[in-house]
Length: 370
Image 1 (spheres, rainbow, N blue to C red):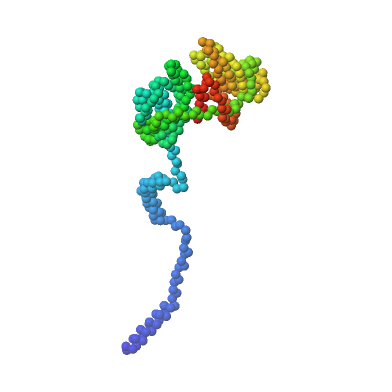
Image 2 (tube, rainbow, N blue to C red):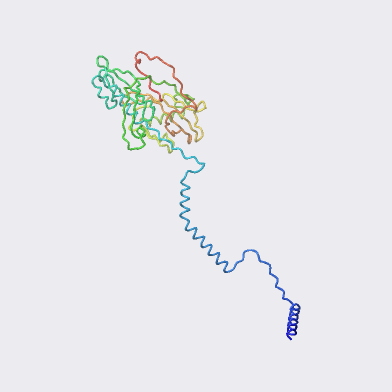
């Protein structure tokens, strides 16, 4: 009985399995191909917005730090760029030269028993043998100065010296030259070495003056006035120069009659002379004569020699460099030039040595610029 029930259960089991094999198993749906690229969805966009907001706040928070880093970087030395070199201000010779000029004048005036007069200039021991007041500098000027080392100057003073002879009569000895060593304290504007403008200023000589030789006399370079016009009034340019200088020096006529429009020229006031006579005129014109005024705008440079006589009848010789321009058939003075014109690259040369005569034996030639 039991065997029959087991057989029936086994048959049912085989039948069920057979039916399961006959059933169609539903096929799984094919997977759709994945979409590529940026997929946006509300959730996705919300995440991006949060990221952007966080990035902005991070930049705001880091702004001061980035600014500080940029400032530090900019304040440091630039790579590959040379720092500008500070140019030192040269010391001014005005103070030392003025002090040296006063010292030389006091030195020439001092003598035995008045050595103390030199104490403000030189504190060293001094014993003079000359009689006080036997020599005097009627005028003096500095002709050369140089800084031997910072704050220490070498100054050369030219003095026109007059001495008294045995009878007490003055006799001009001519121009003599004295070199003095001067130490300066204070700022560079006073000839010293201090960087502070409020530093105490002071000067002292390091010894008594040394009398030295005169500088070399020079012959000037060639002037630019190659044509000699004499003093003929038939030349229109010469006639203009005559009228202009007469008005300029005597005030007997209006200066505007001879001046170019817009030229800022003023006559000397009060007029120093009563009469002016032109003695020679040179100019830089290339033509042989100037009887006819050239076209408007032509420029002419003149060197005019005059004899000017004052109210007392004394006459002096003067030279004037003028620039003239042509306008409307006449010459007009455009300017009184600062100095006579010289040819380009025309340097001065050494003047020939001359032996002075007996009357001028003590005189020394005027100093040249050095």
